[in-house]
Each structure stands twice: as C-alpha cells, then as structure tokens.
Image (cartoon, rainbow, N blue to C red; front, side):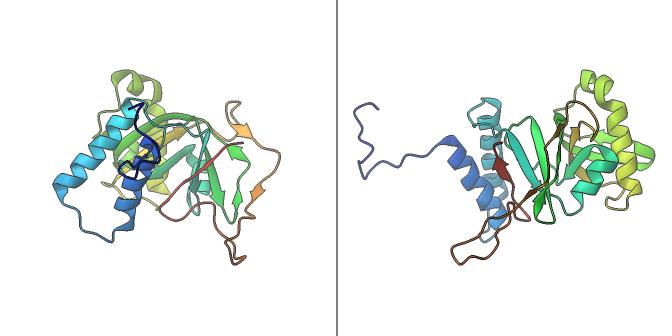
Length: 205
C-alpha cells in the first residue's frame, strides 16, 4: 500500500465516512431500484462500520425540526423512522424556522425500532435494548410513547426510532447564548437550509 501513489489513476481513495454517506444518499435518493438482498447487505455494512468505530463522530447532530422541536420540549426525545442511520454523537440540535434552537440536549439512549402501543406500552424490535436499559430508561420510554400517541403525531402500532434525550432544563443539556440563524447561501445568493427533509447536518461548535 505504501508504494501506491495517490495520483495513480487506477486507484480511488475514499474514507469510510464517504462510503457511508454515499450509501445514505443512495437510499434517500430513490432514483434507482435496489433489491431486498442488496439493501440488506448495504445496511449491514453500515452497521459494521458503526460497530467497529470506523466512522468519525460529529460533535453535534443537527436534525430538521418542523415538528420535532415542540415534540422534544414535550417529551425530551427525538422520534423518526425506524432504523435510520445516524453517526455516533453525544448531542443533538434542532433546526427550526431557519434557526438552530438554543437547547442542545445530550443523547441518553438510541433505540432503532420501537413499536408504540396504547397507554405508553411499547415493544422493542431491535437488539439494542437490554434489561439494564429497561431498568434505567423504561419509565422514560413509556412516558415518551404515551405523550407521542397523545400528540396525534404518531399512531398506535407504528414503529419508530427513538432517541431519549436530556430535558430542556437538565444540566447535561447545553444552552447556547442565542439561536443561530442560517445565513448559508448558494452560488446564486439564495438561502440554503442547514438540513434537508431527509438529511442531517454535522455542526461543530
């Protein structure tokens, strides 16, 4: 490997992060049909990269929050589609109405697939919820499910990925001085969002 030149036209250099992002874009673009087998292999390859800690970790994950911001304030959680791939990070920030909001909570526990049932009951279908998690976060998860169903944003029997977060007033939640407005523009001077509807943006403070 040391003898291979980076300028060699036969060689393409690509980081694990780049490969992971290419796979994410491939799934989200939806312009090509992918077989169930190939989708399974690609998703498991992403899981391998994650488990082996081969992906660089953003300090803060920023998510689009048209509804998620008010939901966080009510439930101290972030709920999205099941098995959605995120880079490992300790904190999450919410992008709402053109601004990053002041409260930046710490991620306590991420669970890939949770079925919401009535009265706060839930069923974890992924293998990332242990007995110790149940003891530590079970009541918090139950409260999240109960409030989520009550908000009418989510229906009984649906499955979701759930990130359990520190509350807005908890000491582990970072509170930045003020909301951060988005002043990003494209080459034509038109405003560009920090995040798109299906994506996330990595922000380092």
